[in-house]
Image (tube, rainbow, N blue to C red; front, side, top):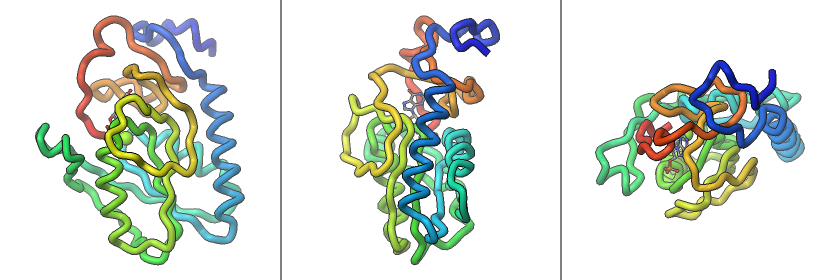
Amino acid sequence: MNDTENGVFPEIQEVIISQDQILEKVRQIGGQIATDYQYKNPLFIGVLKGVLFFMADLMRSVPYSCEVDFLAISNYNTDARKKGMVRLVKDLDIPINGRDVVFVEDVIDTGLTLNYILKNLRDRSPASLEVCVLFNKPAHRLIEIPIKYKGFDLPDRFVVGYGLDHHEKYRNLPYVGLLKGDAIHLPHFSGD
Ligand code: IMP
Ligand code: MG
């Protein structure tokens, strides 16, 4: 498929990261993780739903035993959201104490949500906890997050695809793109 001839998704104005670029990067990150965690049976943790696509490709680039689990969250009202507070809608199934955990995230923007979740995970005493993010948006960062594995730095634009949604749509695009017109200026509060 030609990324630039996007007749199926006419709302996409421009592809900014192609499917090939994404998959190449994911394989690179998977290779680094594979080297760092050999024999450790790492546990990958992600927040539904945006991370599904990255998680699936990342795990398949790790050529030995590893496990995966997911959290689901929902945001509170705007005030609580500003503090990064989230409500756990689904907790982990696997206990993480003593485990080598890699927290996998599709996109980090302000960092507030992730900061809150990381604190929650640290309280459960994992043996180690590192952060792996595919799309980093440094422009709005309010809290510094230590990122061990990073894919792409993104400009300060609202993007969709490869898991990132706009009102739940476009997650299935195999690339990352900009939406046409005003859609990119709409606030996005789905939290995941
Ligand atoms: P934050 O890092 O706490 O600000 O939260 C980031 C969350 O906002 C992500 O998990 C996404 O759900 C959402 N988000 C941020 N930027 C984008 C974007 O460009 N496209 C789609 N969702 C985004
Ligand atoms: Mg997310």
